[in-house]
Length: 183
Image (tube, rainbow, N blue to C red; front, side, top):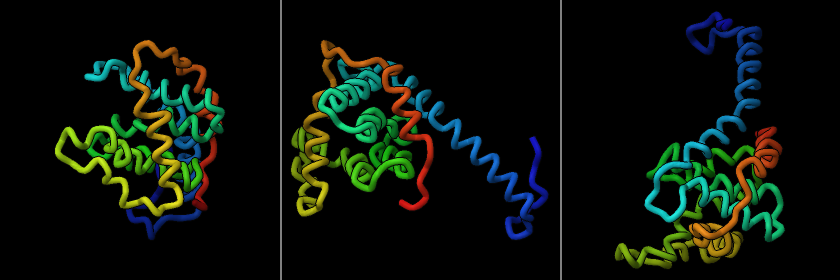
């Protein structure tokens, strides 16, 4: 692989930075493949009644069948991708991965879904199930609560028939095709 000619960024030339930009374009082009591989990695043992991949497939299938747009369907599919990359803050990691590709609304929903999910189980840990209410006046509070209620918390059903990953692959490729640097 061709290398840049500098050891400090402030010494780089136009040609150096054109080489870096070319490599970045290739990395961005390969990104959907990496994301799909992360999903496959989620198809392992889990304490839940389904694998983390199946959970994601169920959430995405439910969103698709409810008539959500591709961006939301893909967000449902990838909402727990942070479990692979950063399990201690999976919501924030998944949101960061999606940020350049989705709307501010969808980014906010994914970023906060972990806090909102606590509504269903925080009481078992002696925590406040209404911790999400710190955002009760936020414009996307209801959207996030509905995301959790309709797509996330119900998607651990071993008897639910979800679409296979191959069904969602074209959607993933379209949504992750081109990052927006304006968001």
